[in-house]
Length: 371
Image 1 (tube, rainbow, N blue to C red):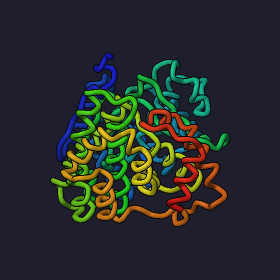
Image 2 (cartoon, one colour):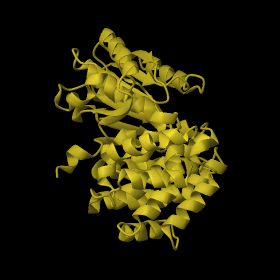
Image 3 (spheres, helix red, strand yellow):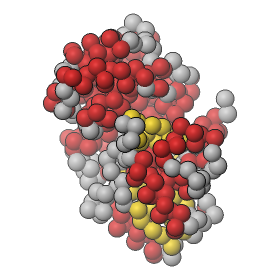
Image 4 (cartoon, helix red, strand yellow):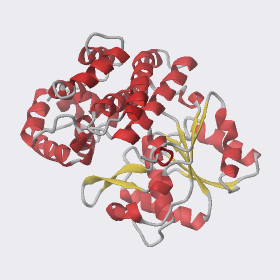
């Protein structure tokens, strides 16, 4: 395995490193930046900070703010059209997983002018996209570590993976100060996502000694600091440790892949609009119980990383501390949707990486148990 091709090329981490953004853009051979972000970060003041930093350094830039919580293929097409109009630039993705995923697709489409986002399945062997710097403003998705994004194909009514080696971020800029204003519920959802990344990476069929090292340390950091960051949102140490743990979890999943929790989570989000981390939390303990025999050794490692006697009990305690677990009917799922959600979860590529491969009926039974 060529690990240099798998891992993020450069990591800039620490409070205040956002100020280095102009120099990082220049290091990629450009003096122009195309910022891709979601619709909420302007109100949070983060995009104003980014613009001021770029303008003070004399960089030409444009800001594209047309990214929703679960980005669609249409949104990617609109963003790519604007980037093609703007011209050659470094794509600077600022936001949570949705903005980072969308930016990868926009970058790739800009390098392939004849393509549209609905062609995602055929773009893995396409021409290169534009270089990308990822600036996460949440601690959870790990989207800054890999070259693919999960987006909604609204015509086909399914989640699709759009990606290419060229749009794996050249630089991950991890500034925990950007997460200080994150609401508690978003801290919980994104942080739970990071915890699941660590657990599923460690227990997946694709686990390796290297991915396990990343995953174990990620579980330790996220398990310790997520409840603190949830309770005390202005605690910079908690925010810093959580952000680094989430990044390590992203590195782990990039090497190993994920599993059934994410398969179900993707399907729940697609059918109900539930935030990703909340969808994962609704089934995490139940999937771990389902997989316990096949993942016994991995779950022992999870328990040690969390300094607990039982991985499942420790996860239950963390979920309770951040008040995230909800029954499916509270998330807007109807009983009639459960068979479709089960079928989509089994069909999802990540599910095939699970330690215990489920049937549709087994997933349906699991969904009924949390309905």
